[in-house]
Image (cartoon, rainbow, N blue to C red; front, side, top):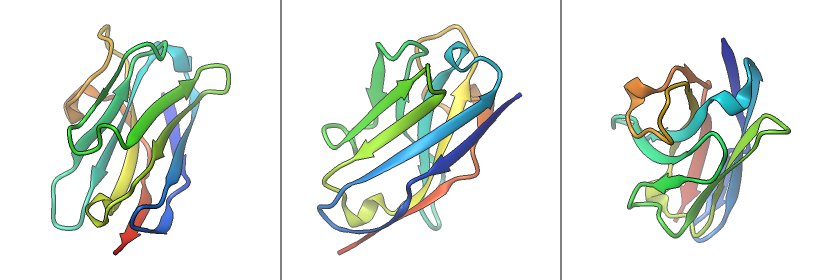
Length: 125
């Protein structure tokens, strides 16, 4: 089992920044690729960003590319999502997730084994 706890959400004005953190406990953190997803009200959960177990490979949804940066620190068992130039359409509950497969990173919810409880991000216009 891997337990994931997100933090860092909040209310920010458009154009501002937030940094989300995901603290992991349980099994060896570096055994897992990590991802961030988000779910806006009335919409399905969607992929945001992913990072390989060693941090060398990253991938982003087109909607956040150039604005968001995913990272991880295996020594501290944490992952992060730095969000800059935030837009009202970034408003959502953000989830971190861990995938234990053999690939570098994953894009689909079903590929992830463990999920955090989510943290709310609200961007005002």
